[in-house]
Image (cartoon, rainbow, N blue to C red; front, side, top):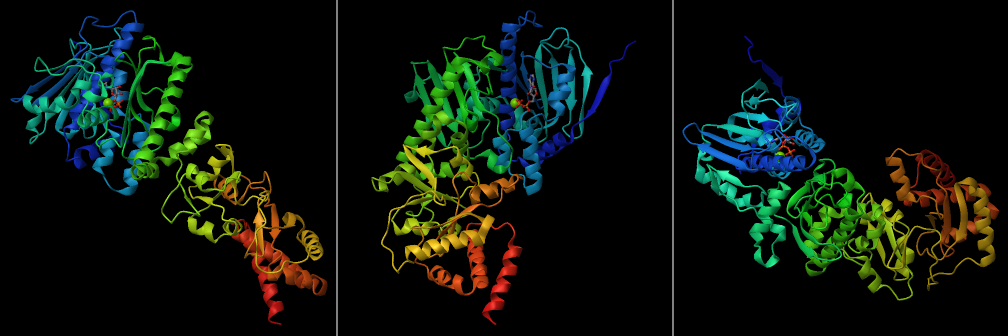
Length: 614
Ligand code: ADP
Ligand code: MG
């Protein structure tokens, strides 16, 4: 006689680690496991609905697309059942024995490093199926796949500790029936009233009927199709938590409908936190695509640009064909149109938020600016709108206060044709560097950027509203004459000096030029056109790229005492003059953060000192 075989499996190490966190550190809001299991049941039903459109034969084809929940106080169990796609033997192992999401893995590593089990972060992340073990000693999954050929009646059992078993069963209906054997102390989840209370919070957003002990509890409702005036803040918040698997409140809510050029109903949320800031790796797209309330794709890749991956929510368009597949979606002109339209709308929405409540916007900006910058660098068509959303300090703001390019232009003199900026490690470093003095002397504002990605961003953005964006360390900047103190070296001596310096410095410089920009400093290292400046060099270095030799335009200040004296010295003591010229060059490079090998400089300084103290 054939005995049914019990397959034993161990959990993947990451799963054990996750289970350990789930079981031991989530004391608050235990009820989220109900939401997770109901949402899995709903996902599975959505998938079945699509299968019915594309497959000829589906196992148990007549079963209703519903979710049934039963409580049993006597046995202390809670059962959540659906007639969705179910799982095959292989899928059970793959889906309930390993962690597929790379984000979850990264998240676990992060927790390990920090050694903290921050419940909030876990909640935001959504631990999915494994949350079943928060309140249960044992979990059974009875399942049969939709696929008549590959499917079997199976039961998966685990105590959520080390592993699980898979056994053959009999007469399991299509879908999954999850039986939770509740822990002592968790009896509340075996009570119908308590489960009803939990379901009422969000089950109206589930697009399938939910029955609790045989009684219908939800009235399937697509919040995004309702009129704004009929929706309360709480409803928005519950919906956000439902679609975003979130615990927090939405930071921004954008509910928008249009009839032309496309019929769109969309409800988008910005979360409180930027998960990528926690080092969790790149987020997945979080806005689902619907067509007349039917889910087409929960995580569509091209629906919105990648840099909007922090958004959660729903986009519903009646204009989509229901049978659109994920493959055809990729290059559907309609999706591209949707993408463009909603992106523009969202950016407009942010502009309005920035105007209406700048403080709130700046809080958003502090956490999410990297996404906007990524957008500038990758979506040319949205660049102008995105640039308008940038916030930064400048030489005309107090420390800690930010401004925008629009305000910069308002403050600038009418004939100023460019917007000047500098990228550096900090405001302090930039203010103490050699480049601002020329701009200060002329009352020209310089925008200060201190994020490591900024230089890269500006490389992709040549202008804002017709004004060129120019790094203030560029040699080709033409500045007006300005009244400066002190007498300048005469033309002829100046020409002789720069000629002599160019020769003495040889390959170290591309050019030596007398300039108008310096006020206090004797010299400054400017970046020649098309050559990488100091910021780009340090970026290239960080990325392990080969850095070209530092070629600079050395600007000399004809009013500087050192320069005037050097002009006289070169005829008298060539050796000393050469040392001084070389050292001035190093000083300029040092101020620009472009010294690659300080050893030569140290040796020369010693030579100079030796001459001085002779
Ligand atoms: P997620 O829902 O984000 O994919 P979960 O941890 O909630 O992650 O679920 C893991 C996987 O287990 C799902 O992707 C799905 O393949 C499978 N699964 C969970 N619940 C069900 C169910 N009720 N029916 C079919 N498959 C399920
Ligand atoms: Mg899930």
